[in-house]
Length: 459
Ligand code: IFM
Image (cartoon, rainbow, N blue to C red; front, side, top):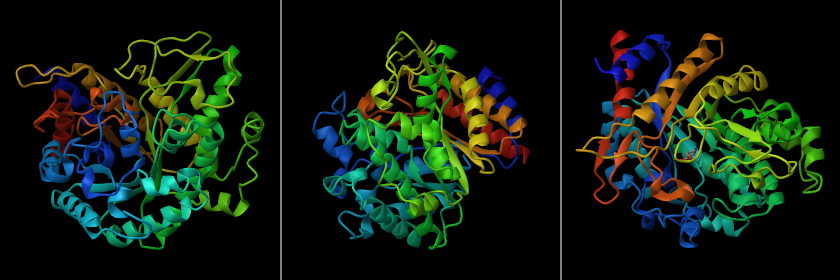
């Protein structure tokens, strides 16, 4: 038996029987066929040169034309669930206009999953905002949350009966701070106050979306945050607390009904006054969710001197942070420069369970970009297998400690367009040749498949 098979056996035996294993993707990163939908902020950002290697939405993984192949890959992987996102500009190309062709695509995708006995886990918004809405102010526009509720209602009306898990948003921190407070992501705004206003509007949109979903028969709805553990020596406690606040607590405070903390208002008083926040809106945002998804990749390690460069670790992303602090990811790191540190997944789960008690948790993304080499038609990505093994062990450890963790989704099913990094950073468990669109499962895919096969044979 190979080493990865032994490890798969070990994990399969430790996993609770009803635990869900899946993989995840997002619409803009894989779909391609941008001409068959309206434009999104990411199309504009790529046209404006915002993507490092010049990649765009086309062809990506040409998933629109190859989704049956991708569904077969999911079947081969024996996953319990598949997390995908819907492209807002594909489904609602303009105003309240709904595209039947757009909805039909997701209809076929969902039916294809169900036919293969795979639970559909749908994310309503994974960053591809219609350009038309950005022109009105995007996530800083006061009308955006109502628009998002209408879009959510369209999806619920069509898919409530068939979609097992619903997520309103993916990583609102990234949407707000990489897209509005800085110009690392689309739409490329670069204004700290906009970052905070966008954060609030995203959460208000979440609240209104949840209401729309539930009044249209959706039963299992939550949201997805990118949470992590912030590590530093105690002399940096003030900066650590502020970064923890913006990265983790702001979102969990709103969901838990604690509202805006005094620390937030004090630390951001030179940036904005928050007087647009309404009590009834805070109440709506804190309506209980059925589950929370955590996307975890790396801890955030701080020190007084900068270490190596890591994508998305930049003080401008945390407006209001004392200036004496810097990011210092320690080796080993992934190609994103992200420190690999599975114990921080455990602490993140512990902290989240304490900050949002009583809410079932899922790891909705976890994975890494590594320098994959295609040799004789194979990719033996031992580094990625190690990464998954260590992080799944940490997840199982959390369950042993009594944390209500119900599932794990590997990011990502396919190599895809890694946003501003383009196609140069490969996160897939399946290799994609972007010229020929050939898919080749990597060793990590075989490893995850093995876990699923053993678990299912034990049931
Ligand atoms: O590719 C992204 C994904 O879209 C959202 N979470 C992080 C991943 C890796 O950067």
